[in-house]
Length: 295
Image (cartoon, one colour):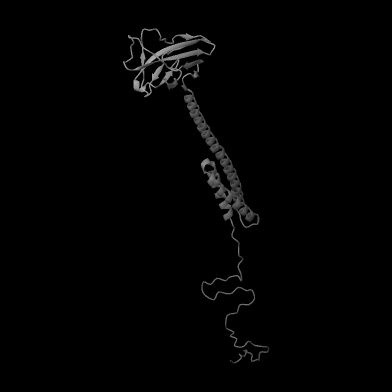
């Protein structure tokens, strides 16, 4: 390629760029922006300033978990579910607050709120747990006390029932202070005018002694005993005109006693053993029982 000659015919001095096209567009040098080379191409700076995004996720999460922990803690039966979100709210709130202090987050108030709600949720969960433990303990203790009372009542009733079953000759004192003793049955021979005794049966006489151990007179409301034979069947009361029988009636004075004598007819195959039931007042006191052989 030949070197162009200026119009005045002088020869240029100094270095000339090789293959330089004087009619070409200027080149980009230094920090000058590059001109658009194509339609729609926008000039750009040599570098762009990168802006950090705020890290607000921890604070938001802490607030949500704190609210969940408090709400669950308000329901006593759900306290065991509230402590975990409340604890996580405290952890995430602390991390979110740290980010806000370092300028990495912009929701400092939200992080603090989540932290506080988490702490409150933990306190509510602890209080609910303590309340539940106390309530359950109270229920268990109450149930145990009732069970013990029921057991004691059964044992007491069993002991009282056992105490009311005696052998002939043993005394039993009723709640009104009357001490009753039934002696061993004695043979009894009804007269020819006796009522309630069948031929071939065995008749026995039962003696009931009542002593007033109290300080006031006491009325004997029911002075007749009941007798069961060896088979458990009721024996029939024998009434005759011999005057050997006596029914206890009226009042028994303090320190005094009343004696009743009663005859009963027993079938021969069930006359070897009897049981006598007696109570001075069947409306108030359960019967006591005396049993044993008739021989």
